[in-house]
Length: 151
Image (tube, rainbow, N blue to C red; front, top):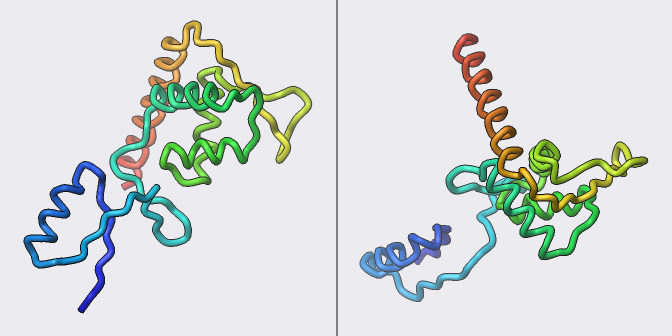
C-alpha cells in the first residue's frame, strides 16, 4: 500500500478524482489548500503573475477592504502572499504600486522603518497603469535582447 499526496488546480479537481477512481484508488479525499509550498518556503505559481493592471486593481480592493491609510513591509508581504507570490516579492509589488502612484513614501521614514501612504485616487489611473505596463514591457524586451546577445 502507498499513500499518494498531490496538488491540482481547482478546475482540474473533477478530472483528477475521476482518474484516480478509474485507476482503483479508494478513500480519496480532496482538501482545499492555500498554495503548494515547495522547498525553502518558495511558493509554486500556476500560470503567470498578474500584470500591472491586475496588481493595482487587487491592491485597491485590498486597501478598501482593510481600510488602509498607511502600510509597512509586513502588510505588503501579506498582500504579496495573498496574490500567490512568495513573501519576498513584496518589493516588486511596492515598486509597481509606487510607479502607478497608489503608494507614496511617508515623509520622515526611511530604511527598515519606511512607511507608505495609500492613495485611493483613481483619477487617470488607467493612463498611469498603461504607462507603467509599457515601461515594464520595454524593460523586458531590452533584457531579452541583452540575454540573446550574451549567448
